[in-house]
Image 1 (cartoon, protein in one colour):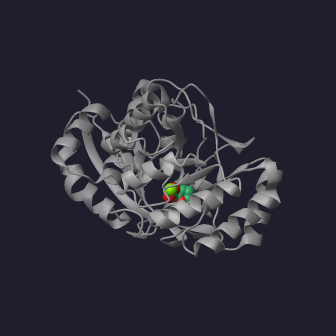
Image 2 (tube, rainbow, N blue to C red):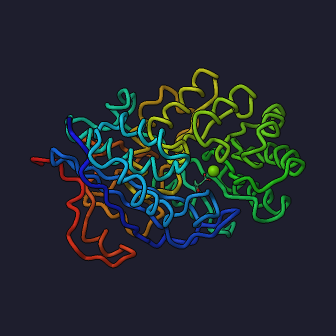
Length: 385
Ligand code: MUC
Ligand code: MG
């Protein structure tokens, strides 16, 4: 039996290329917890635990994710079977919640398992049905003219032709004017979606859904609190434009509730929010059987979390609303030895063993919060590689 020998973590803080304005936080850097697992056969794996705006998006912070892994997950898994399924069972049995931390460790075990078997993680998840994923870009500079210029550049560069606008911070009329101006400027060449990040109450959302539908918005993401599932069902029943659940989906049980209550037309599948790659696959499975559309979501992860998500999303039979795996592009430094392939409005899913990524450890070290310059981790090298 191959066992888990060590699990190490550190935080990297990487500046974003511009401020990213969401309803609940304005980001200027992204903090990512990098996880490194070493197994008894010498195979290593990497994972990532990333959230948005400290504790303003969810109930796990970067510092909390690191502490949970160092103090609870690592001692629990030390010496145990390195198979992702067995480790996940043990984690689920012994640790409540902490989905982001669990996902980071599960990702590292999948990376190691793929390297051991000589196959990409997508093959361990059932096999990919596509090699490239459509990727949208989020316009969130906080300025309408700048957002329009940014979108036009992205379309010209053939990088993105679907855009998500972060709204909910300003009042409804101002927000709708901002969205409508962008839609008017870009016209039919772009799909426009919005993410309210739970900022509206239900009455505002009813008005907002009608106004945004009139402005030709294709998708409205989490307009009200994720806890208000019946409210989401009422907004979905309006039938004006597609309604997507995001923060309300913290794993398969939430997915089942949304499906049985017809509380969304589309699910944003996020591996961290779901509690891991296998939990994310279960959320997607519930959507598929319920006839709910799929969208590949992000916590604005860096390269490791984004590519782990890409391996899962590549296995989805239907991906009607594409993905938002642009996190690495929002970072001023991609931290990779070889850049990801974002061309033709899509991201190529790496085909090498495991996640198929090689980090540039010089760059990673430069952004470590603890300033540790030791060569502790030869990340991404499988045995014999
Ligand atoms: C979210 O709420 O979906 C995804 C894209 C983005 O800009 O923020 C995230 C989080
Ligand atoms: Mg969202």
